[in-house]
Image 1 (cartoon, protein in one colour):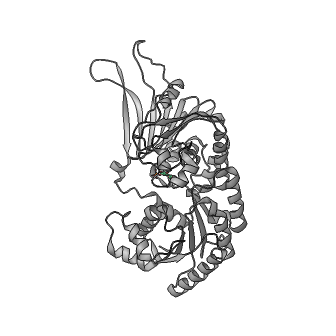
Image 2 (cartoon, rainbow, N blue to C red):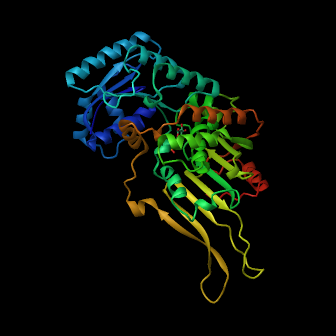
Image 3 (cartoon, protein in one colour):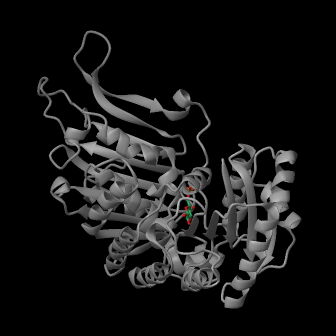
Amino acid sequence: MFDCTVIILGSTGDLAKRKLLPALYTLLQQKNFSKLLLVGAAREQIDITTLLHRVKASVDQPDETVFKELENSTLYFSLDFTKEEDFFRLHDFITDQESRRGMSGNRLVYVAAHPNFFCPITEYVGMSKLLRRSSAKTQWNRIVYEKPFGFDKASAHAINTCITAWFNEDQVYRIDHYLTKELVGNIAVVRFTNIVLEPLWNHTYIDHVEITLTEEIGIEGRAQYYDAYGAVRDVVQNHMLQLLALTAMEGPHELQGAYIQDEKTKVLKKTRVVDGILGQYKGYKQEVANPSSMTPTFALFRVFVDTPRWKGIPFFLKTGKKLAHKDISIVIKFKDVICPLEEYKTCYSNYLHITVAPDSGFSLELNAKKPGYTDDVTPIQMHFCHSCIFGHAEAEAYEVLFKQILIGEQSVSVRFDEIEYAWDVIDNAHAIAMPLYEYQPGTDGPAEASAYLQKHNVEWKS
Ligand code: BG6
């Protein structure tokens, strides 16, 4: 059980409404806090009932008793992220509330704001002593930054410099909520604990890797942000490169925080996009009210990881909004087997398919004999369905995230060097000329994507 003050900077935004506050509601319902003081802060002038009312829509079967408890634990504070004096006022307000409520002084500041504010916010949080530089395990002070972390390497580096000036690395969480997804956490376990996989996990046996992050939803009212960032900065720089790094990394000393970060960093340092194509869905320009927008809502990249393990093996990364299906997955295509049966028989490639969403699990595609008096071969799937085995209670990503931060587990955080190398990959990709094609919403993306994959002998699996 935790006794903690959680301060959400940006509490009236979409993320707070849909993810952060519902996750805290669930943590309260599960009795994770011995005492909670939740302070929502943003520029808007609203009262706490209005704020929590907005949250109710994002909670399944809201429990009135828990909502009452949340209401009693929550306060709202109006402030301007660019005004130093507002943070001093916030500090005094919180110190006073903590002493009235007998809180122990554990504090968590969650920055759910545009990255342009990360630096001023960090400085004002430090200057006002809302948080202090300290690696203490009691009366701990931690700060969380929600992605995107900067716009490119230079801006990410500037933010990191600000953070280092005020806080120790073990107080800082640059979070990527994908790292808390059940099957993402499983990638390393599946790889490193199964002798039937680990010896084959290299360029000798693997033909290529496909990483997919496709969505049916569009930009969900985030026109200004999305038109500036686009698909590549929105999800490739972070979620997709994290999936790639976990798939490609060497075995960490232990399957834990810093060791995993070390290995992911080594991969990102050696990762490069070689070519690709971009797309934009029809109707996007009107939606963002920018008739000349060249912002991609779809990207398909061919990527190499220049380590001995992955010599010459392509990773294909595909993402897009308003596509036919939601799919977050990693597919490993193993090299073709030389069929030991008669010449005219066909054996099929083996695949490992790791599905993160919508249905998490994995399956291994093997060759088997067709039934009856024949030695004809057919591909079959050995399937692990997460919910069938472990039930439907897969925790929501932000619940896991809060729990990990509260116990000080850093593996949910992306370290500053990982972020900067990931931006290197993206900055270099932006320097490569890639065509931008239009596509119909509800399809698999631009028709040119199929031709591109065909050229590279890839039949997309997911
Ligand atoms: C966010 C992106 O980081 O991830 C969104 O900004 C995207 O554009 C979302 O929709 C996808 O997350 P999830 O958990 O729904 O797969």
